[in-house]
Image 1 (cartoon, rainbow, N blue to C red):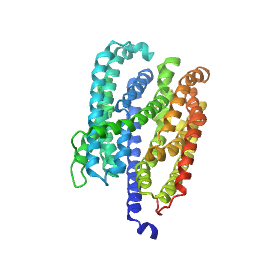
Image 2 (cartoon, one colour):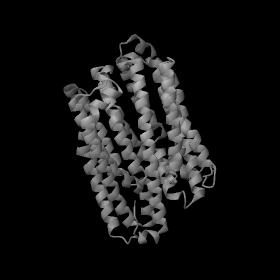
Image 3 (cartoon, rainbow, N blue to C red):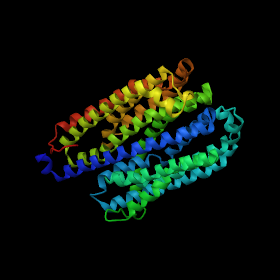
Image 4 (cartoon, helix red, strand yellow):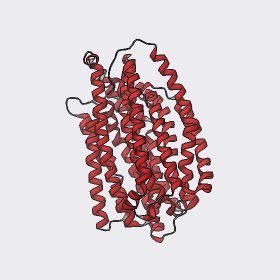
Amino acid sequence: MTQLADNPVAQSRAQGVMRASLAGALFQGIYALSQFIILAALLRYIGPERFGMWTTIWSIAAWGLVAHLGIGHALLTSLGKTATADPQRAGRILTAALLLVGSVSLALAILTAIIAPQLDWPTLLNVHDPQAVSESGRVALLAILMALAGLPASLAGTALLACQRGRASYAAMIAAHLACAAAVVLGVNQNWSLALLTCIILSPPIIAGIAQWTLLLTGPHAIQLRKWDRTVAHALIHTGTGFFIMELVGIGLMQTGPIIIARRLGAIEVTPYAAMFRLIGLVLAIYTVVVLAYWPAFGDAAQRGDHAWFTKALRWSFLKTLALWIVAAIGIYFLGDWFINWWLGPEALPTTPLKIWMIVFVGLQGLFLWITTPLKGLGLLRSQVISGTLMTAMFIPLAIYLCDRYAAAGVPMAQSLVILLIGLPVNALVLRRAFSNNATSKNSPGDPL
């Protein structure tokens, strides 16, 4: 602790990581609670087939997240290095990110409004219930438009995290998700349409974004928007390209499962998969909280040559990730069926193979996030782009094949295999090389906790 007191920069960085981690953990707890309430109310209200249809539409809408072209993550990396050291450049980075993401989102929203009504959604979603058939196109259109609208709104939350103001960012998201859960419960009791409920469920990024932009642009720690800078925009696009490919990979691995299951087995079979995925989604979200707080801190530490802090942070983030997976695996295996039955009912209960492979997948995904987060902080993206492209190319045909053989359990089985065979070894080698290079440098001590 004496060393930490003698190093105020490392101390400030450690405190920022701790505050962001605690605030993020609180947010994920509230988010999980709101999701449990929303999904339980929705399933009981619309039934298993319409719920499976809605879950599949949600997965399709998630592809709209790629519309920010990796700029969101590039913003986190760039601002993490410059927010305190160069406020003028930070303002130009924020302006470029907002204009780039806003213009792309608007263009895609217009295109979606033209194309989506022309598609045969009942056939695409493999639904047969008359009410599901009649509302599928409308719900899909609104879900995609809401997802696109949330992209420029959510940039402020990313910027607050990059500036190590995670508490403010998470506070806005907590309030938005609590309001959303309350509105859904009210809507179910008042027999609101599924289209309206979909808009409400996808509204928190927009509601929170308004509050986050206010916090970001006002107050003593405000970032001021600056004049458009073409050089800064090009740098963001260059960095964002790698993140864009990785986001395509992430969405492909995480969100195509319901689509594959719906097409191969029927929309009703998506419900048990969705129930398990929501359950492990809480673990994945906490993983993200743990490692996301370190992302800008890794970049800052490397920029300042504080390699001892980098090393300790790497060790501690691994131990936190491992401990979380062990606790989650035990809890999900022994209590998962009981909880899902109480939460969503017997129609959502997973098979034992589905449950086991979901547990394996969430463990491997946590390890993958732990390896790739410091690489993102350092701006070493090539290995993630290459491995991610290979993972996606292998995952989709493998998931279809395994889904046909092992039903819904084939999807997490395929996810686990591509991470184990491609994602982990490729990126572990790059991290080891970066770690070895930094270990020989002079370093200043600090405590990552």
